Amino acid sequence: MKKRILILTLLFSLAIVPLNVSASSTAVTKCSAQSLSGIQPYGNQTGYKYKILNGKLWKRLWSYTYNRWEDPAWTLV
Amino acid sequence: MQFTIFTLAMAVLWSGIFIKLISSFRKQMTVLPYFSIYSLFLLLLLCMLRILFPVEFPFTTVIPSKSVLPFVQNILYTPFIHSGYIKLNLAFLLTIIWILGAVFIIFKHIIDYYRFRHLLHTLPASQDAHLHHILSKAAPCVSLKNVKLIVHDCVTTPTITGFIHPVIILPNINFQDEELLGILIHECTHYTCRHQFIKLITEFICACFWWNPLFKELSSEITHALEMHSDKVVCSKLSMEQQKNYLSGIIKVLKNTKNPQSVPAFSCSLLKEKNGEKLQQRFNMILKNSYQAKRKFHPAITSFMLSVFLLSYAFVFQPFSEPTLTDLGEMDKSNSGYYFIESKEGYDLYDCENQFITHMSNIDNGLKGLKIQKNVEEMEEK
Image (cartoon, rainbow over all chains, first blue to last red; front, side, top):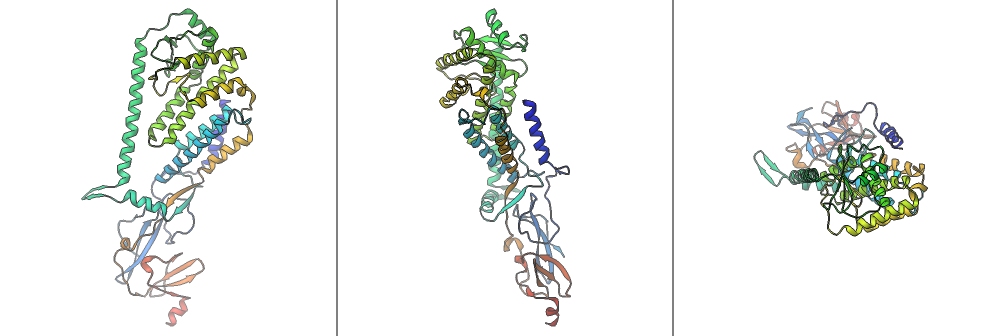
């Protein structure tokens, strides 16, 4: 009976874990400039934010999840 | 597979739901025909797995929270001490308190365990041949060389302790042979089924989440489930008449428990849970022959439990915050030649030379002042 419980649990665990699972816990960045709408399957939801300064367009990566900038500074587009 | 503070919060939330489910089903076990002791163990196992694996999988859906969670996040992470390189926020302080509390409780358990083992080491083993004879009848597969049997008033209820070298301690109560047989089968089952390892993992988890009262309930439910499992084994080995003698042995122990005993958390006792409702359930399960009368696993209840387990990994709540104007810093307020063209799924950004730069579903706060055109030709005409 214990073996049956163990096999049953293992089978369902295999169903959960896909073959190409990644164990990385670093922030997942998105290169797309799209502001996020809808639902995303990543831990850290990020997106580029833009502004115009001195007539030039600048961008910087923002983390919607952690409410902070992921890039250290603005970069010229 | 990712671990974040949000997946940990979801694991704690779902563990609370599982614990309430366990408590609810367990209380109805006597009358529920499709919920056996094995179903209870499966539910407990799923609860433990949920706590031990607080991760999100690629199929996990992130549900953004735009007001509640950002508000909580702001309270926790806004520093209240900001001096040079030192930044102290509430989250850091709570984390330190959490870790210190867990470490203190784990060390206390370890010290209690070693003190108890030291006490048992000083106590002489029982030389009563009759007692050893009953022990050999109770657990013929357990090597008597490994088991130390002590009779002493340091415990008020029969207890077994030890992971590799088990020690059975019996209180100084005058048991009849069949009462003792049932009690020793019960205690030996704790050892042969490795219940002490289950208790060890449980107490470790409960120590880690010491601040959550629901985890004390989990510990209590697991202890009770282990007691019922041992009772089940007793019932399978004894006749109905012998089972009644076993119950009278428990009553004798109950009458003897005037003072609380100091037994380590991961030892197994005959009467660890003195809760009236749980004790009554143990008696009812034996007297109504409930252990033998049920199917081990009912397909519907098993499917329900596994579905809830999988559902618990299906989504995670996370805060969703946009940068404020302060976060954006200095920027031009006047138009600088950049413009938007409205498209079906948002806006396309163009520069003053009508070159496409990027697409956005919503216009950023930093670009709110830019004009929105219908098409490039309209902009060229202007």
